[in-house]
Image (cartoon, rainbow, N blue to C red; front, side):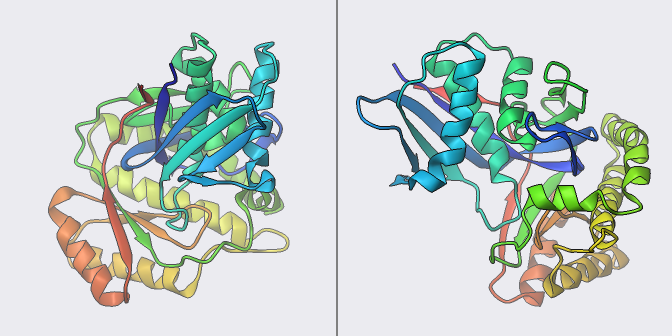
Length: 321
């Protein structure tokens, strides 16, 4: 009997931006994220007598587009001393690829869980997090719901995520604002590498532990204002690193700046909200339930045909037959 694994994507409030070990995806800093209910991936692995195939959203993928998936599976087969066999992987991705959300976080968390279910590997969530991390760093956090922390560690055994609060009661919501659907010119992998040439990269890493502690305190104290301010600061620090790299680069587009200015204007009007931005031009707005409607109305008025998805806290990995 096959099982389908579901994992939800997450958004980092304290960012991961740089690898200590690229092969194992061990980061240079720890990170903290919010798992989102609105975005998720379902993945099933099945045996086949033919060649290995990868289906995404019901469409068979080319060998080139399947390469990362099967390279990952091969790594796990070798890790557990399993026979390398041909498989069919079927994945349905409920994450808009252009919305600036890390679809790889839910994709590889679901794939890691589906792999363990297929091979009857009794993996606890720490092991699942480590396995997911090998596929995509941010996937280590999508094993868990609510708020989770990915401790950087210094080895495969010590770099994994753990839950901070699986069922938060905080009034925290996220609006994913899709401003630009074009494929980004600089991949996250390259951006992480190039960013390390900034003279401010090491000072930013030095702040990581302090900012992580501040974010944990904001969550434990149910302090939305402190959380929002720190998330916004941390995102701006990351993008400042990019702007001061040698050579410099940015993921921002003109509409990104317009969105930032709109959020600042909303705050001036007493509508409390904050932004966070990952490796792309699209904004994520952190807000409270009472302000969602007004924020959406303002963005729809400012931007033509803007797509906005509202999300709150999502669960950790689940399984279904």
